[in-house]
Image 1 (tube, helix red, strand yellow):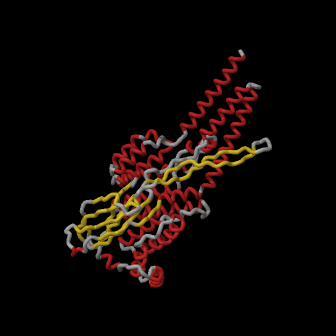
Image 2: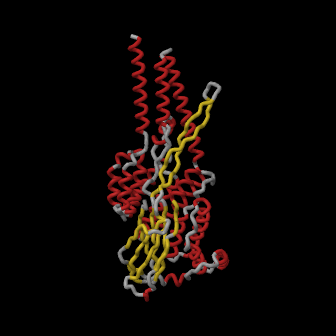
Image 3: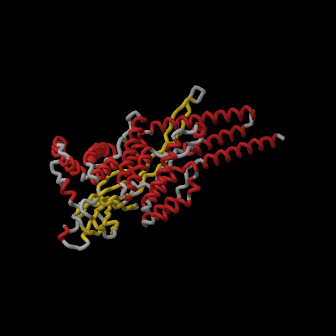
Length: 465
């Protein structure tokens, strides 16, 4: 009889261990294996096919990762040229995030005994901003510039809310790309006051970007500021910029209106991924001593690529020098998404750490309660006590994971080139070079005709693996 009970206790505890571990593992994020296929298709410019892969794996994302599914689809539809559909999906992601703002108390309580992967994913702050940045670019390609400017204003509004939420301690206060894009569009629409405000905000934002992310100021921005302030007769501001940028060559607003411009947008590399890193934290063990907790925290890890720079060439279709010959511009860095992601996460790591320690403490206290209960019911049954210790330790180890979910279809960085040419027909070619100057890829686009005063936008995706 004693032998039977002994085995019965052991069997019950082992079953409990297995069930608990399976429950924890089921709380992990969505599978990531399909991203290999998505990236391979992206590298071949097969974006509709990559979107189909994401759709095929929808059930594996699950309801808990519905926002992540929308993120991935929104970006892939954008790259596939399905701009209206991309906006619909990204708007849905934004709606889901708004609905998640009021979190379920019961879900939070459950996460305290497992990990944050059991909670619905609502996106990092920078990802919530990138929703509107990508939507703005969708509207750019659709030619709906007023809607682009609405999305840019939403970016401002979100970042102001985040700034208030974190008591103005966050680094990511303005999105420089959104401001700069607004300046370009306002100027194209002839709304020069608004253009000046956006260019000035972009100038301020890129000052922060340089300090926090190592992103230099866009090469055309000084000329933009000089041109617009001259057109507005803002003498004081114009003289100030002349002192700051004495060697800058710039066109007047009238001269620019007689030209055509191609704004080339390069989506370069792959967004960073999250990995666990661990810290130890001492807590009181309830017996006058301390217990050392091992806590999992997330960190963004860059995915390196070979691309160093790129040059955009506009080659006259007639080949005649009368049209000014081929004009080339090197791209400049407009948005370093990896740098923003890393800094954004570092900004809130103290809050994540506090929550992780509280979670690990809750699991430790729960494990102590289980051991006490086993000891109370089984007396001197050493095997039962041993299995209870092993079970709770396995559960703690298996469940101690950080939330490693992220928007993985974003690029590493967004680069721009602004190429001003005489009106006419051109073939556009872009050449990507590695950091040693070696040619990686050359892409030639169909010929296009540019009219006087026209701004045309063109994008390209390169992974550069």
